Image (tube, rainbow, N blue to C red; front, side, top):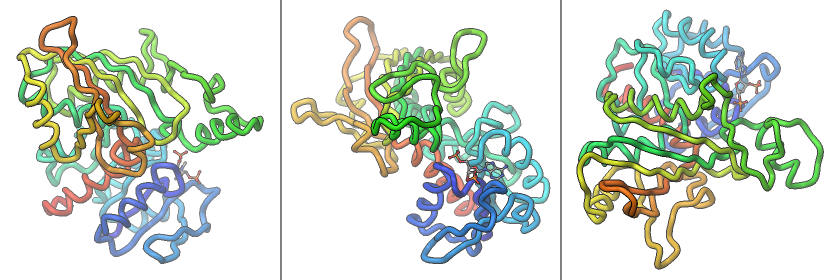
Length: 329
Ligand code: A2P
């Protein structure tokens, strides 16, 4: 299987190559693609040197699969060109997520809806993936009515320029700014761009994408997304009101038995999820489970995951694995 990784030198692309390698994905040929400024440079994959190529060359090579992590503009411009010639595209950008003709997939939840006709498949937003991973099994059992989520998001989600800004500020070095303000020792309530209704795009992704993934518009989600000076993963404080009452021990059991979730919830030993523990891992970590004392049928929880792995690269590779195992590519 010939695979093109579009954006192979970026933050997600680099982790994607690592995940493909770790999971021993059965590819016969790798086509690492980056912008014109990187063409000709080399990278190592499975102890072999690969030359970085341009996207047109990758298109001509007709790969079986192309995984895009090079931003929305590149996806909008190139994904259909790949799809039209028979390449299946898994897209990490927001370009196609809410397009009604494209599927938005978290493999543990809805990969079963994929068919051979799905030539462009969207990977959800990183904050969405970790939240919906924990919400999906609980929704199935107790039926969600409303979710209130506040995020504490890693700078790695913005890209390498944001990681550099944070590191420069930590070291007292003046440099290029990825954010309108200092991120070091700060919390910026502004992820992605503002929309006219006062919400940021990130907050609207958190509100809309879970409805599409769960194929259910009967619940609502309201979000506040905040960037904090950490790089290991996104954290989320989630308050979820269900139609039906729950038993906390049963909630714990449901989460423990859900593939891809690790329950880390023991206040007596200070055990709860944190980005420094989630970094480099594929699971979504859930803890701080407790009843909301102010409202019936309502649960509070804390969800952390490495946004570059399950929030992006790992989810994309899991989609690719599903396609391959089920002979959809
Ligand atoms: P390059 O490293 O040459 O700029 P990040 O999201 O971390 O900023 O990474 C973006 C990724 O997308 C990088 O690998 C970048 O390559 C790549 N990229 C940006 N624009 C294009 C393009 N037009 N065609 C192919 N790859 C692109």
